[in-house]
Length: 174
Image (cartoon, rainbow, N blue to C red; front, side, top):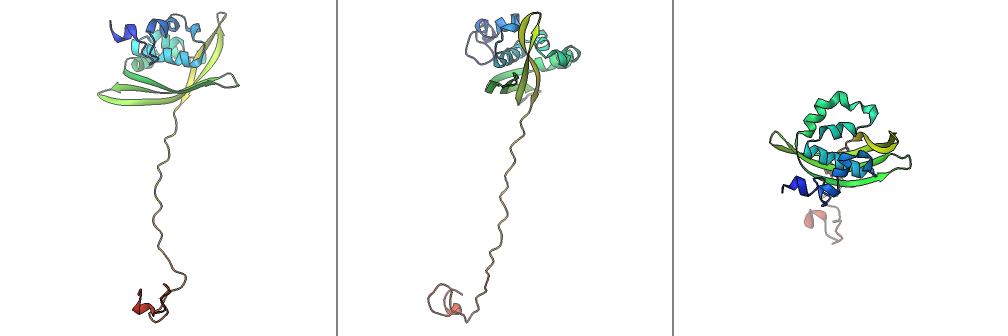
């Protein structure tokens, strides 16, 4: 048996038939935005372009972008790491994740904070992907250039040494 028919590609460590497959068959079974996001990732791995298109929010008009969505689905997806998921008081759902993929021989990481909205469709309440934000890379901290040490008072050669020895500076530390 191949990995795709036993373990769910979403990284849940559950069998596909108990995890994302029921959602692929009936998208209303995703009761939380994270479940829909995991099912959408699995759909990418399994090549389910129709599912990905159908789970975009209706306002996205995803059918018009089917070719671009298919290109994304047809990448080699390597793994999913869900970082955070929640439902805000506004009713919007959010899922932050990292998805690893390979394209043209190079590996990449897509990190996104996806936003989901719940809509009534044909009498069923369903979550839909609406959009996502890419996190800003952390600012690169640069060390401040060293500032020159300046003394308020310059010590003359014949002045007492500031170390407290009682000798002239030129005979002690100078």
